Image (cartoon, rainbow, N blue to C red; front, side, top):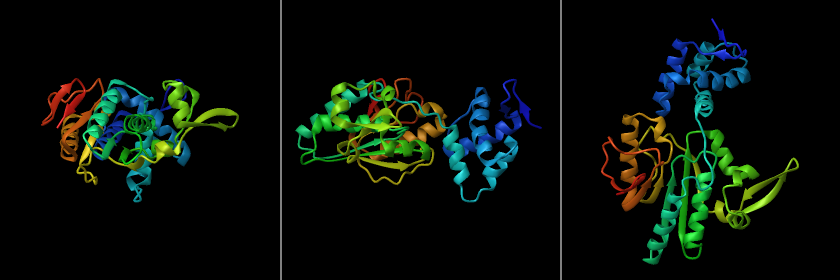
Length: 277
């Protein structure tokens, strides 16, 4: 039986919600609380319409029987929540700039940064701007790996095009320096220049399934505002893997609303949301 809300929307029954909740946790470590039934209903409804599937139960079966795994990716894309902005929680970027200048001043010429939850790209492009401003591009080997589990948002990262509202948190000086104005159906948008793109590599990565393929050592890892979706088991494994990949003296930045308290971690606290190996 399909339950329909007063607004005419399809609602997932509790038993089916439990199936989706278990699947999402097993495949990508995201914990969906009981209050997320409405969110799951709304997100999978889009895929059901696209596939002309009538009930959530049948859509769940379609995901489970898709041997290619592509519909599971579509489901994860639909469920993933992606909120971000340029220079969000700016203290972290100020610290990164200071670290890069210090290391560069001591003769370091190779820099590796990982943005673990790239979302739609505002954070990795902010990292690229911060890196360019701190150490320039002469005689420096700098790379920023930007990963996300969602193929949908990674494509937006690769496009690197943002509307005026998205770009509003950036100074006019940086916008002019690192973005080109482009017209899209009569609307002014802003496209990242090659000087930023040259630093960035985008890859799909599931943070709940370490070990990861990167070799390291990494200088800095930004893993911000993503662990709030994980339970402590998934968080602990992720933090241990980040610790392995970082160089001695490397830094981990997490969201201001997050903490490593209660996790099995060898990191030392520098300040709230900032840790060092």
